[in-house]
Length: 602
Image (cartoon, rainbow, N blue to C red; front, top):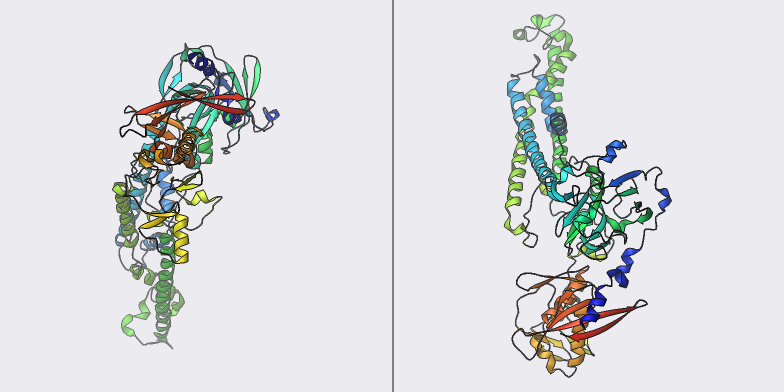
């Protein structure tokens, strides 16, 4: 038995049909290499050569801030005076510097300055927080090859094109890499791309066969490669390149590309060559400049200000027209009707001989006099409310995610009122609108249905027919009361005393039930993770597979370990109340794409 196992360990994952699909090359035309758009040249393990050859590649330091020290004042002022009220008060404040003003300029410009300064201060603080996050990101540590087979811990921002880096399990990739090898003999690694495309399912990447044997630090002492590939672009799902290694040219495909901000999962470590850094990486190519976001309420406020301005202009215009009429009537045929106004000794602001000009000056004075018709404190009040809302969001314990150990973080407070509002839904499949979670509720074995839980479909049908769902439901042709609530297990919601707690051994079709759950525990692509307490958790490519494996585990058939050529499951003895496990070893033989399965008791 031991001899057979040693021989099978020499097989690689590429012999499995599901993993052999990973080795398929790209269908892109590699003859484009060297032409426009496909001109990047990378000297692997020799980053200093790029400067000698005249290549100017960007640093790996990235910035997601909206402002800089130079652009903060002009850009922030532009953002503030995009608001109609602020622009109006600015014009009104400038007019107060003229003799037309009915009050001092300080009383008009001081409130505006306070509002603008407070809002700019808020924008500056939020952008500074984004800067702090960028600094934290750029100062993350990764191991970089520095010659003689030694890898030194280096900050992300110091990574250069051509560096060979070592990324360990559960760490993010600091740049776009070409996968050279991993701890698996076939160069397989598992990647989580949730930060890129929102997918929680793991994706399989595989290195080229010629580099998959580079599994030790010392193997990179004399490594020299030349990678030629496409120029930086925003397409996450395509890549065209070639690798010159040991006098041979090998095509590269998206299967060898590891993107920045994706995470290494279920793989102890990988080695990769840096080909894109900083803002040349695909994730940064897809990132747009921080937009000037304005909420619907703020835009609606502008319309309200327009309405108030029209009302204000109407009132001032009406008063100015009557002022011009009465002023012109003060001097008729040389007679002074309102002699106490001294029209014979007047200025341009009150001159019966130039009544239209006096009326226009009165209009400007009236606009300044009535400008408090528009509340300048409205914007500062809303800004204060938004800041407090952002603080409450950051401290809301109900929005803390225990699974990822991450609290909510409001990077900006401009769109608080937009939270929870859905304007447009663009969907390519039903999974887009769901939680992407599956639960094992029912199953049918040898023509017998097991599981007393009610599915959503049954609830909808009962509601449609007007039949109430009581405490008793049909299961297997007879009615049984639902069992008491047991501790909820994520992905498992099967309730049936006939097969739970080892009771399936008393069923007439117990052999079929045993084989059914053995298949659930074996036929999948899940990866087990065993912690210090011998508790097993699973990483699956889809929630469906995870639900099947968890159901098998809860019913006594625990998927425990996977090797390249075998699977180990732990079966709980149904005749024992304690966890007395029997280990079963499943070995796979592959003959021309067909899989033969043999089971051995350990």
